[in-house]
Image (cartoon, rainbow, N blue to C red; front, top):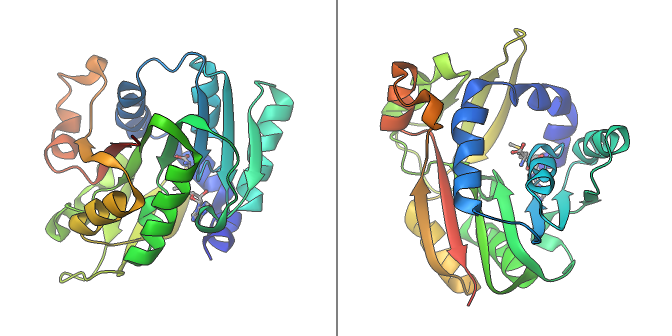
Length: 245
Ligand SMILES: C[S@@+](CC[C@H](N)C(=O)[O-])C[C@H]1O[C@@H](n2cnc3c(N)ncnc32)[C@H](O)[C@@H]1O
């Protein structure tokens, strides 16, 4: 299971949050999609070491609960909470099998769904998110871009990572990520490929409406910086959103 993977790379993954694309694209896209969350109850699925759990709480959410399958990631999240208490809460669960923790205004999943190796696993993640939401609540997040053409997989090195897979990638195939941190550390993990249409089907079967790939947004301070041209033209990563009625 993935917990073994992230137990081993927890520190390196945390450090990778310093790469510029995290701030200028990943974080900016998330908070553009989230909008005003003041007073919201938010559930952060696959929260890792709590990077976005803390940012969501700082964005004035009333309550933020983070869930991750990796005890080591949750340990780092709790250490940050201990050091600088914000009121974030954390629990260790496999999202596919987690209990209903409450009724949330928003569920966030930053890089959870790309761990599904089959439509059934993806559906289990989507159903878990759906169960936790209030009617009208939104499920938003970030993901491997399942429409990213394999030709481009190894072209993102200057942003701090590359992807690799079989040229004729099939449902469930691993997408190998290699990250190059700014301190020189190199670490690896796998996501899994499922067709974009499989995503649309799983969201609909779970009961969601308005599922869409939202694209990515670049922080306005970077809009004239040609460094981002390739990332924006052929995004390796992608935002999504859906709603419960
Ligand atoms: C790429 S990290 C993202 C962490 C965090 N969301 C962020 O953006 O910094 C992916 C996380 O998903 C977690 N994960 C993978 N499969 C999971 C599952 N079935 N249930 C809960 N967490 C899972 C891993 O342990 C890891 O912490």
